Amino acid sequence: MTLYDEPIVASLLRWSWFAFTVISYVALIGYWIKRLATEKSEVMMENNEIKVELAYKKAEKAELRLLASLNALAKARDNETGNHIIRTQSYVKALALRLRMDGHYTESLSDEFIELLFKAAPLHDIGKIGIPDYILLKKGPLTDQEWEIMKTHALIGESVLSASEVDDSEHGVVEKAIKIAGGHHEKWDGTGYPRGLVGEAIPLSARIMALADMYDA
Image 1 (cartoon, rainbow, N blue to C red):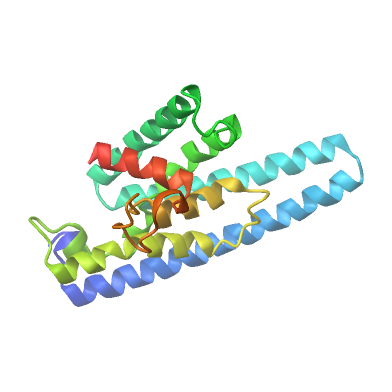
Image 2: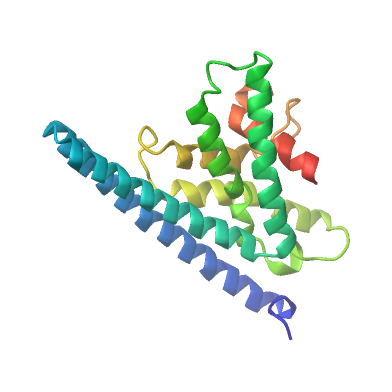
């Protein structure tokens, strides 16, 4: 028996525990990032350039560890998902750069925004850690009931990332990841999910991710 041949009940129990572990981990990392951000503010008040630089580096390393760990979790579900993550990350950056070059959203699409988008893009399907294997890895079409369960991955991903409680003004990559995870299946005409958002009510980062995601699919 392989990992993905296990009974449904065992699978449900496993992914529930897995999701709980991820949420706990993200919350812990979020706590440390907030603590480092506080330290950074304190040393800035001291006007000590060396301490400020060290505080920035600590916060950046904590953020990179968080992203690397979550990316590994997303890729672990199956190899195709992992390859999809790598491809869509590049598509997102290319789309954002081209939009800016063509004169669209020039105020929003700063170099910093695009870099954050690039870092956050691999987390768009992190919510799939909460989808049972018998659905996620099913060969053939899903039933209506299975499809409704599959669609919950958008809100699961949004919830997992929101559990970090990171200060968005200091760590925009998490804020971008939350919007991408929760909004990359919304559609311009309002027929998407999970909220049925319409047009520009869908975050720009999620709209760009949606195009990259569908193109790769």
